Length: 283
Image 1 (cartoon, one colour):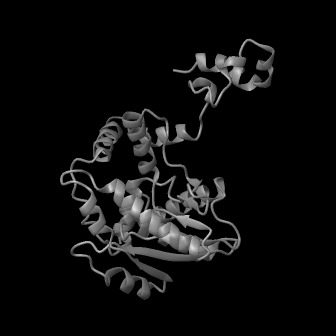
Image 2 (cartoon, rainbow, N blue to C red):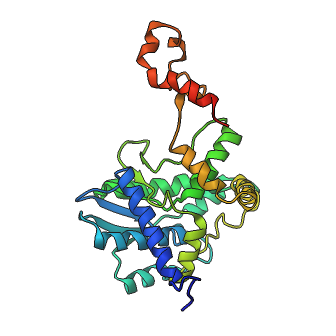
Image 3 (tube, rainbow, N blue to C red):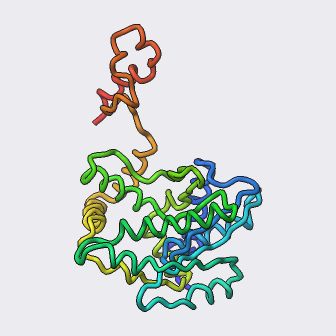
């Protein structure tokens, strides 16, 4: 067993940190309550395995009772090992369900050669999983997106959609039938990767789109990695900024009534107007 400089088991401290971060995110956004039925979307990657493992740990300790079911979508990809996940889940005693839908053939047929497949693949996968949750009485859908995914999505929307938009830790699906939660929202990808390695999760590779080299997300990931090397903690600071938004310091009239400034109606917004002076002192 490897110890850190203080003589502590790093796997224990890592588990404790991730468990605390997940528990804090659940509490901050009221993700899970007593009696909730939570469907954990298990892709077979490091993120979803870590999510499932930490939620099971918290389930045994939480003051409220909630149900967990791991659900995996078999997309009929070439080389897919249909026994890997079921065998591992049975050994661990984890309740699970395997959905089968040939989204691979659909994506290959619809998307021209050389174009990225992720968008359509994600929509088809999401549709199948959300439909299962709605039809089987699950009122929470847990996804394995972490802090770095959220920050990367912010820059993807900024650069390519001209929108300040990321991934919220909790949201209602477009059709209104599902509540989606991201309990790993406070967790870094580096911690998740280290935890996955320590736990020895059976990783299922994505042969559909994982080998594509032209994805814009990879470019953003590389940019953020370079920033992190130059200024450690920058990604965490960017994420924290998403939790501390000042509408009056941006430029969206849908979020702040700029037209009311300088009129009697401005009295309705004293805290925002007062923040102008504070903003002047900010770097």
